[in-house]
Structures are given as C-alpha cells and as structure tokens.
Length: 186
Image (tube, rainbow, N blue to C red):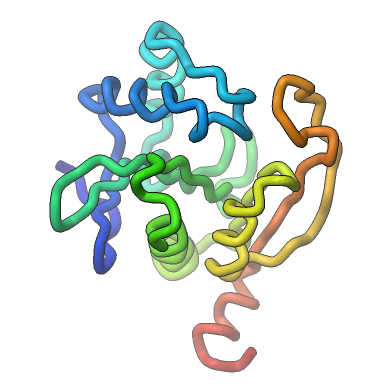
C-alpha cells in the first residue's frame, strides 16, 4: 500500500484498481451523488471503463487518494489533489467524496488540510483551488475550514442537479496566504 499522507485519523493512499468495488458503492449512494449527478448512481461499467482509468492516469505526487480510517481500515471515500490534464501543475484542484458514515465528523476537513499542507510544503504549488455548487453548504464549510477563501461565482449548466440554477462557487488558497497563516502572521 502506497501511503501518501497520514493524519491523526486517516491514511490517504493512491487509489488502485482493487478499489473499483468501493468506488461503485460510493457512487451508488443517491445522497453522496446529490450535487454531482442529481442523485443518479454511476454505473459499474462507467466506473470500470471511464472513471477508474481517468483516476489512475494521474501519476507522480498528485492524483486521487483513498481515504482509509486508521483505526478500522475502513474505506471512507476519496480525496483528490491534482492539476487537471493540460493545466498548470502548480495550481492543483482539491476535492473529496466521502461516504455518509464519514459526514459531519471532520474527516473532509482533516484530509483537505493534510493535502493542502503537502501541496505547499512538499510539492511547491502556487495555489490550491476547489469548486462546488453554491447550494452545497457542507462542502463550502469544509473549504472554508481548510483555509480556502471564496473567490468567485459562476454559471453551471446542469439542470438535472437540484440547486444548480444558483450556480457554482470557487475557493482558493495562495501560497503566500498559507505561509502567513502557518507562521501566525494572519
């Protein structure tokens, strides 16, 4: 098992082909998929033929990471820290998708903070950003708790997703701001 990051309660390791069933289960929960597909599950065929190959296409220090609870070894979901293909490597996107059993327990913030720390301290990135639907208040709170700041709102054309008419929002954390906070110079 390739360990990328460890926190007090989580091990974040690279997603592998062996995680396919866990990804299918995660994406089968209508509540997990509410703001992503309007609650429609992702089919096993799509995960095996499209999603998993895309996840595995990221190499190096950036990519998709399975979130494993340290005390139980249970798969809680995944995090991503990666520049989209063709975009600057020093401006990765932060993301997360967790099972309902992990909601409201601080795991999303804990994993996000750890990946942000890795991005700035080990990977030398300039900026970390994240996006979500404006109505996804839980995800927005995680972004804010992890230190990202709201920077923009934008239109999304996803009528199948409840609340998408209200648009999406972008958050970011710049290296200089992260360093000031880390050194207590807010």
